[in-house]
Every structure is written in C-alpha cells, then in structure tokens.
Image (cartoon, rainbow, N blue to C red):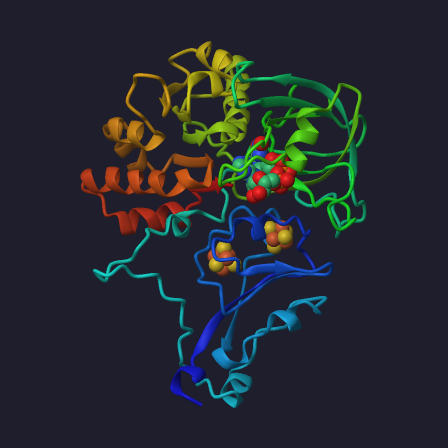
Length: 423
Ligand SMILES: Cc1cc2nc3c(=O)[nH]c(=O)nc-3n(C[C@H](O)[C@H](O)[C@H](O)COP(=O)(O)OP(=O)(O)OC[C@H]3O[C@@H](n4cnc5c(N)ncnc54)[C@H](O)[C@@H]3O)c2cc1C
Ligand code: SF4
Ligand code: SF4
C-alpha cells in the first residue's frame, strides 16, 4: 500500500431516498462522473473532481452529500447502485481501522492546473448560495414525484403562445398550465418537472425535464390555480448536431386542453427576498428569463397595489438577436423607474458581439454599490456557458471598487445573495 492509499477523500454521494431520477446531474457533469441504472443515480469517486457543477441544478438537493472515506475504501459505483439509503458517516474508530487518522483532513480533488501552475478555470459554482435570502417565503418542495405519496399531478394546458419572433431559429413558447382544484403552491424561482408522453429508446417512461416557473406566486392569472413556463424548442444539441429534444418539443407542441403530468415543485434557494427595499439584480440568457419574469411580475403587482416600498430591479438580458429574446415586447413597456433593463445581443448584423458580462462591466459603478449593499441579491440563470463570465465580471467589479472578492464572494454565498441556475 502506498501513502496515497491511506489518504482520506471527501466522497460525493447521491441520496437514493430523495433523488427523483431526473437525469439533470448526469447531463450536466463535465467529466461524466455520474451514471445510473434503473434503480439509482451514483457518482464515480475516481472521476468526480468536486467541481460542484451538479449541485445547484439538482432539484431535490439529493446530490449534495459527502462522506469522509479512505481513498482505497471509497464506495464503488456497483455498491452504490444497490443502495436504498445512504450509509452513515464512518466513525473516527472505523476510519482509524481503515488506516485514516482522526486528524487527517480529507483531500479535495485538485483543481486542474495550467502549465504556468495557475488554476485552469475559475470555479464560479463555489460562490453560488445553497441558502435562500433570509426574507424569502417558505417554499414547498417535492409535493409530487417518485418519492411522494402522489407520484404526479395532472395539469391542463390553458395557453401556448410563441414568444420569440416567427421565422427565426429560436422557437420559444410561453405555456400556461392550470391545476384546477389540486394544490401546487410555487414561488418565483422554483421549477417543476414535466414527464413527456411516451417512452425512451429502452422502452422506459421518459425522465422528467425541469422548467422554471415564469409566473409569480399568485399565478399567471391571479385568482386561478395556474402557472406559466418559458420553453425553448431544442432542435440542436450542445455540439450543434440536429436533434429533436424530447421534452421541449413535447411542450412546445401542446394544444390548449391537453393534459400534462407534472412533478415538483423544486428548488428551495433560488428564491426572491421579500423585505422592503431589497434590490434584485437579474442576469440571464434565453429561457433563463423565466424566473426573472416571475420576480419582476411579482414586484410589479406589489407596486401596482401600493404594497411595495422600493428597492431596485436591474436586469441584464442576453440573446443572439433581439428577435430571439423572449418577452422582448412586454419588457420594453415596463416603466424605467421600475426596472433598469440592459440588453446584450451577440449576433446583431454589423454590430460588435456583446454579452451580459460586457454590459455588467459597463455598469460597474452601479453594480459595485449594489454589491456592497447587503440588501442586494443576485440571480444568474440561463446557458451554462455564461456562468463563469458573469461571476468573473462580478469579481472584477468588486475588486475595481476596492472590495475584497474573497470576503465578498464568501458573504454572497453565506447570506444567500448570489444564486446560480444554469443548464
Ligand atoms: C433547473 C433547471 C431549469 C430549467 N429551466 C428551463 C426553462 O425554464 N426553459 C427551458 O426551455 N429549459 C429549461 N431547462 C432545460 C430543460 O430541463 C431541458 O433540459 C431542455 O428543455 C431540453 O430537454 P429536451 O427533452 O428537449 O432535450 P433532450 O431530449 O433531453 O436532449 C436532446 C439533446 O439536446 C441536448 N440539450 C439538452 N438541453 C439543451 C439545451 N437547452 N440546448 C441545447 N442542447 C440541449 C442534450 O444534451 C441532448 O443531446 C432547465 C433545466 C434545469 C436543470
Ligand atoms: S461535483 Fe462535478 S465532477 Fe463531481 S459529480 Fe458533480 S458535476 Fe460531476
Ligand atoms: S439531479 Fe438530483 S434528483 Fe436529479 S437525478 Fe441527479 S441527484 Fe437525482
């Protein structure tokens, strides 16, 4: 046995009792460390580099489990696939028996280094909060799903309209679902799961696809038990190959009156603050606008009823062109003293490419003031590829303003002030 065999590692495990087998983590893991069979989703300790990319998109929190283990005794994939529940943490005595002394700190996986010896990539995920803002309303989660008493809830499609310009590649739909008299209480920032009709290539029912709720807590149409979603039809995979995404095409093609099987609600941290005068900075691309629409509309309704005392709303919204930007028209009609909107288009002909992080740097002075104010909450949602650039832009804004990013980044996380949801 060599010395490295005696090291303790922090082993990443998925709680089989809570996991709803939605496949989100497997689809997101950059190093293919997650795998599944018909029973469990599991993490391969030899492959996982603890990058944390899978933590925030997991709808149940079941992926956020860790055990101190000797490297040689780490739970194998085969073993994890048989579990019905997570094993308890090993005691100091059990670890000692396996050759790991009580004071041995667990080894974290090394961050990949470049030739120059500096980390290859900035790990934006480590700054994302897993706690909600202190003033967030209580969120119900997992009322329907494989582990709940009721496996699914049936919704009726009450509306389905396209919200991007017709004739352009991006086909994004605003879908309204009505739950009749069945309970599905949701808050802005939560998501639900949709189970597409039919079966997959191996004859099993499709796994659920997650969609952020785009309407505020009292529904798309107040007084009715409904909510809305913003769904982009997937016609190309992440590599640009032609595919017909199962869930998104199913949803975009639904007709009014169709029935849909729903699970959820999910998400207990990407929630808006409720204290008066709290500021919200929303940074999104494409369908990442869904939770931002929900938060904006809730504040608009509060303001209209005279129940809101202020607090800034700032939006950074990116798309390739303005025709591909969902809700472009309605956004233009919001009063300027209510929301500060900044658009970035990366493919407008004869215009330089502009991304949300470019706009953030242009608004550095305002963002620095907001960063320094503990009443400000930041929300990032949309393409996975935007996350790092956005968090780096926040870091640069902080540093240029003389704020320590290490202190600021840690505070944003600990105080539930920076929320990342990218997919
Ligand atoms: C927390 C969370 C919230 C989400 N909210 C929304 C939302 O509000 N609106 C929305 O439209 N989607 C949202 N998604 C993404 C959504 O869950 C699905 O992944 C997406 O609709 C594609 O599913 P599909 O069944 O059509 O494609 P699949 O049949 O699952 O996949 C087909 C192929 O396309 C690739 N692919 C998957 N998603 C994309 C994508 N977005 N772009 C390019 N290629 C892709 C897959 O890797 C696969 O190769 C969210 C995801 C998460 C994790
Ligand atoms: S922490 Fe990173 S490497 Fe490990 S399973 Fe999650 S996404 Fe994959
Ligand atoms: S994302 Fe979470 S709930 Fe979904 S399969 Fe992975 S661990 Fe399970």
